[in-house]
Figure 1 (cartoon, rainbow over the protein chains, first blue to last red):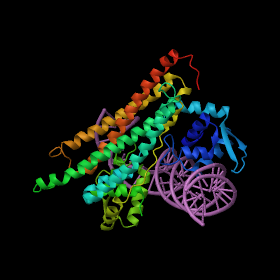
Figure 2 (cartoon, rainbow over the protein chains, first blue to last red):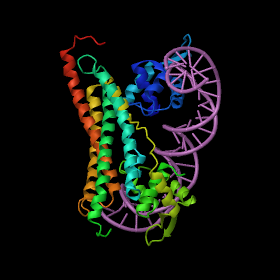
Figure 3 (cartoon, rainbow over the protein chains, first blue to last red):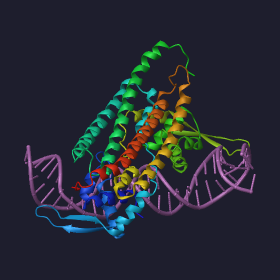
Figure 4 (cartoon, helix red, strand yellow):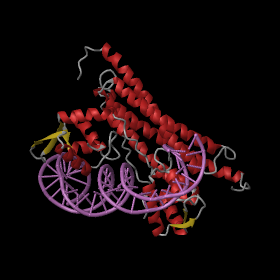
Length: 192
Length: 192
DNA sequence: ACGACCATGTAACGTGTTACATGATTGA
DNA sequence: TCAATCATGTAACACGTTACATGGTCGT
């Protein structure tokens, strides 16, 4: 049976038959909100899915552009995907370096730790802005409710993740700034 | 230079010299809130860190229990760690199977999709409860503010992640339930 | 001229998971 | 007696990242 990436590819291709390049754009790390992967991984997985008969491909020739290999889901692929969807998802461990770094913040100057967090906020602010634009684009569809609830849900999830991260960063910055004056007031208290 | 896991280990061992087993308990998948890893990975990494002179170990013999190999951070290890902390963290792609599954929810019966989400909520409710208990335990330290801001921050982050996830699940359930009646009211509207 | 985009692939390496392997003690 | 906890390790495999490889078109 396919890997998680394999199912993610099947999902996108079922919605719209498309090429590896198209998939890679939607899964581009730092931009993708359904699944993230590099093109190198995607082309290999497309090959495996085709070999297993879950995808089929048609070569489309173009003038003044390289030929495209357009994939679409076979009946078997569609059935496999439907079976997989209802199975309980694998829990992924979300290891984030920033948490490890923050764990030892007491050991570095306040200026450096604050700057580290501010840099993170800049990156994630931008990503959130991007995602919100896509959400706005989806919401103009008829009657406010988007045609594809799944895509809407994926976007809301991605935005929620970013919002939560940014709010944690803000809280952290406040903590870092508060720390110093407090310590000064209590300087004589021995450290246990 | 060590891997992210290596630095995570150095971080924990610097706070308290301890064994691979102790580290494995704190990093236990689904329970760890700083970094998650299996014991098999940890023992290998401990070996590498020792070989590079970032950790040193002392064997402690016990009665009626296997001997413990207690690791502590060397001066070199401490310096390496301090250097690493201020470097910008690697952005990790957070691929979550559940988002892929939700993307195709329109293709399965409402009952099944709702149950899938409810199962997820049970799992994450429990994890959040666990984390909140640990937070409460930390907060009893002198003056409400915990001795180790880093640990406190890591916990708050983990709890925030769970809270956000659960809130998304609740929203999703509401959407799934609302979908059917709405469609009935507008049944004659053609799908674009 | 130069960078970005279209378009597809392979190879080497590094990280993470699962399973194998062992064995005593403690509590239900 | 049975499961859990203490305690450490190895081996095979699966997954993901980085780099290598190629080459035309379009806009500035």
